[in-house]
Image (cartoon, rainbow, N blue to C red; front, side, top):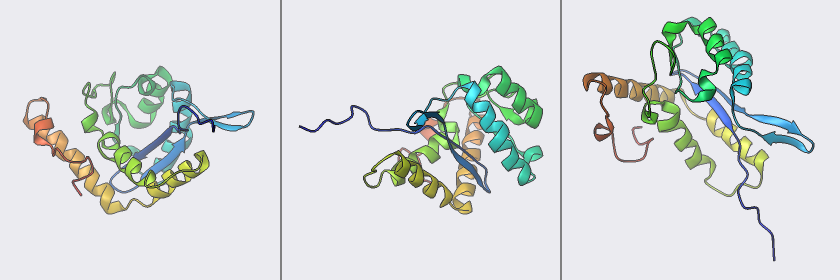
Length: 188
């Protein structure tokens, strides 16, 4: 008999991107007695990631003032300190999210490029073979994110813009019937 864990080991990862570059990946972990332990995302953990990682990365590239910050309305994303931080750096008019003037459409995962492309793409390439441990999983995620080309990012952002245009042309109605029924990253 050989005992096996009931669930596979997991990581919680955040990544953001523009048509020109990727910021991340960042892994949500806390230090436990035996080393790093994966943790869930909440406002208390999300705010420092934005303040210490995302905003400096955008400042370094000189694009904070031209970036539109798009995120869904998950509770973590609309925690009061997070909203205040985003408003300070992006202003109300360059944030797309629930509880902001430009609200994220409810139940619209197919509009978020991370959801309609990035996470599916990463799962396909990262899990292409067996993974021995969490360190290898994190290394593979990091490696594959850094291998994404600018051309691919540009294509994903252009596809997102097309989705937004379809919604506008159809009065905000669902657009799934206009989108390809194949794999999420098949538009390349």
